[in-house]
Length: 107
Image 1 (cartoon, rainbow, N blue to C red):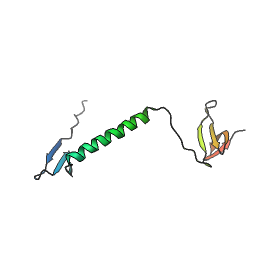
Image 2: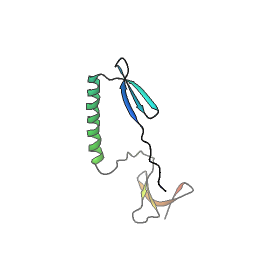
Image 3: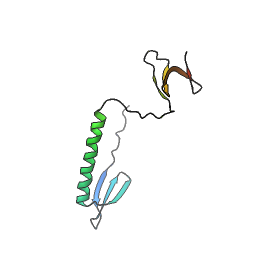
């Protein structure tokens, strides 16, 4: 049995009568906004491009950096034993499991 084709929302962009506002219709939703000054618009585009350049550089670096705080444990999977986790706390490293939400070290 064939499915009915999905209807696409109609998008309409128009200026209001004064030209200082823009109205965008997307289906049944209507958004009205003050038209940005050309210089402000251009500055925002440049700013956005600079942010994206920084983001791309950071996203291209592999790995994740964690800021460890004293007294707060960090956990990771134990690569030698998939059934255990490794806990690092106050300079001490232990392997163990979680029982009822609590870490239990394995001797």
